[in-house]
Length: 195
Image (cartoon, rainbow, N blue to C red; front, top):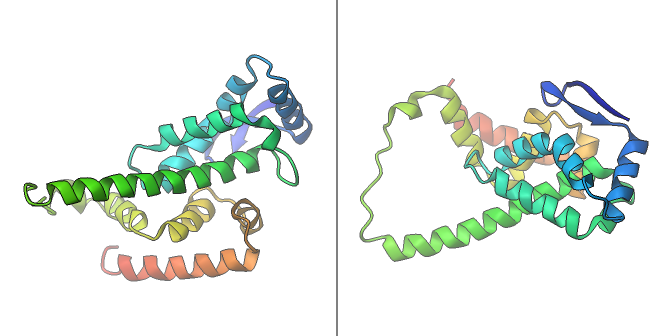
């Protein structure tokens, strides 16, 4: 049953599917029913977009990531299932797609930097936007290692419990707690004097 409700993790109104309805939706996808993917995009798209946007460091590539995730779902709906539900599968694939996207972007960026190193003028680091605390905090989070950024975004921004994060990342809850602790320490060091 599709219901509209306040999603505490999102902090905004969103659609919610109970577990039997999610399974029914997955079955519709597997049968290739028209409109099933659109319903998935409507229900889960906003959250996946926000997650991808945050994991990609607020750089605008989130829409591409979500489109790739939905394309994977359309191409292989039989992969959804097992001990994870549809939402957990979508989040896990979004995380992996962000990792792949960052690797490709880094490779492309390195190529461009090597080619244009001599002709590029230096970029000023003292624009008015950098004085904005929110911008600077985002920059610090963006500059964390991707594995540190993932746990910070999933736990603190998406408010996903540690046990769920462990399932999504395929690691133990203790490993998630260790990553969170280390990432928090890095954030604390880098934010000293900022706030």
